[in-house]
Length: 193
Image (cartoon, rainbow, N blue to C red; front, side, top):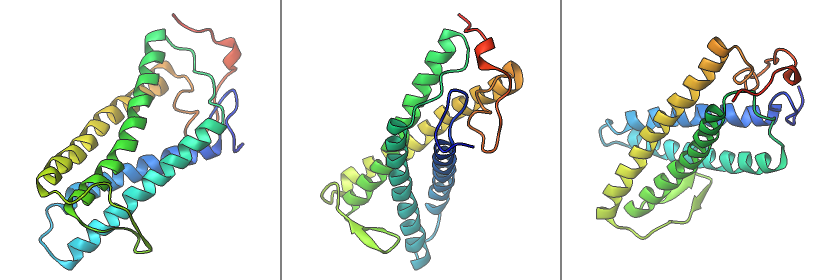
């Protein structure tokens, strides 16, 4: 498998970024929802610190993914009706926006609380805003809402990929699966209108 994408499928670097960021967001989001019910303790502080560090890591990986995406060409779209292609592109734009906004809103929320933000206890990051407890409540609501909105868009994204795989039997999902091979000759398939 090639590191770079080709005319038929995504390259291994794009696939790695896709799956690591996706699993990181889901895992850290679930972790974030569960940790809010913990009683105040040193363990809770450690759990929150880990959640923040993972969020920052996802943000860095996403920045690297965007840089790679600018360097590496995307495979041409699979043949599909125009409305599906437009929907897929809009869904990807929304996913990218939420993936960027979610960790940034967490960083903002942390800053408004006046807490230091460390990356795995190795270094501190600057605050994005001055301490403001009232605004921090709003920031927390935004951060949590962004996660739920991201989940909604993700359900549409996964649902569409599964529809293409099981009903349309095309290569949309196969092109992004690790170690998967695409079927058929793409040039023999015409675009649907």
